[in-house]
Image 1 (cartoon, rainbow, N blue to C red):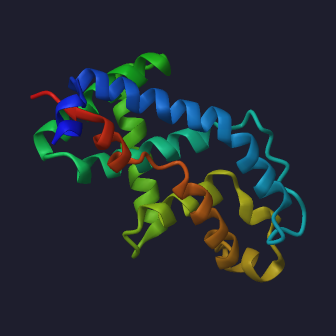
Image 2 (image 1 turned 90 degrees about the vertical axis):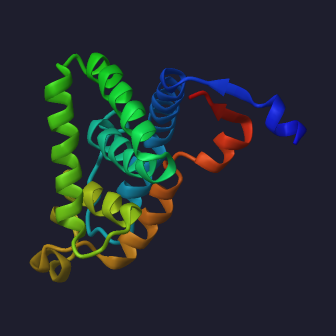
Length: 180
């Protein structure tokens, strides 16, 4: 009871700011390790040589993945408000119009859905999207390269990595509560 009273109350705008800052912080601080893990993965016959500053595609995949969990965390009305604020703020960061940024995110959502079909597991979809966006098929052995499909062992390892980039809403709600 006391913990509920002591929780800090946040507006939708504050939630959007915290959400964006946390995602950028984790991507900026974590992609170096992700790139290194990919470059050294035994699933590849040669290293993809992804540079630690090539985090653009990864960042968008993480944003899309986290937005999908946003929709399952909040009631639809509040999720829509927070998503709109996130789009407005990210459009400014990416120096794009809100309409162009929204289209970019919708395109990524569609891409993840397409490469993930028939699975509905977003973490798995994020791993597959990373595989295709970074053209990792070019570095696989002939068997998987001919199939144009990721090595399932690589995907399993990437699922574990990607799960670390998903916002922890349970921990958030232990510390904060939302204003209406």
